[in-house]
Length: 380
Image (cartoon, helix red, strand yellow):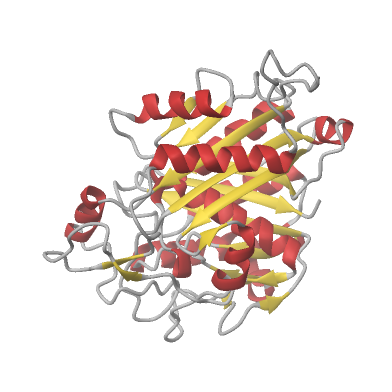
């Protein structure tokens, strides 16, 4: 296992806000997504008449990303008990502004308006300016979480807000459809025989990461501990993962080493599991590399099978799902399963949520270009 220096302070999650095609808040995610109930439906937000695939996991109406990000951050900060300074004429309220110096790390799709959106969201929510933006494809949000955790654990800051958002739109839908990455049957089937690809989905998520010391001093509740994090790069292929899973395995080993956790202590894996042939096979191989025979007893599921792939926002939505799994004592279903694939020998959570209270759980993500991340969540 890779050697990584232990860091001096624990990182905890004190605020959480989540929006998906299932609706707002963590409760609806646990009630519906954990049951293996996909949110996929015909797209009405834009015209898909000339596309091979015509479904996605989308919210009703035409939500605006900046508005949804600002609302999610406000909710997460309120959940964490982070107050803004009162206006000058509100002399009765003497609370300190706990957001003014708090950095915002924002993961969203790269375009010309990205930096402007980040600045607008930071201004509207009272967070430090300038914010930092992440556009590293499907590991954008998990890279932001890893950077935030490193800053906190090394004492550079006390807390960081990480937010991520993607709302399904016609341009990227067309790109993935033309590249035959989307499931023709409109169903995501991670690690299953007969899998055809992924389905896009909406997600806007925000978390407050904080040093355990700072959280304790102000009496804040912790959703979970972010015990470890790891990143690696394959440099193997533009879009295909390295078949032997070496890159993702290094990321997992790094996260475990940083936390001082043995592989046998992991009790659940929320897999990247895109429902694509090469990705799922490589990820299964990576898990066998890290856990050896123990992988046969570790429950695995990919919640992309119900909420879809939210690109830059996927990793933060899936981190939230992993936190909720650790807290709720239920592991979410790996939906869409048709039958075993010999290249993906895993203990998949099928049919119904599995009762379990893992001490540690992993959330894994991978991106085009060979980027891999692993986030290790522990019970608070």
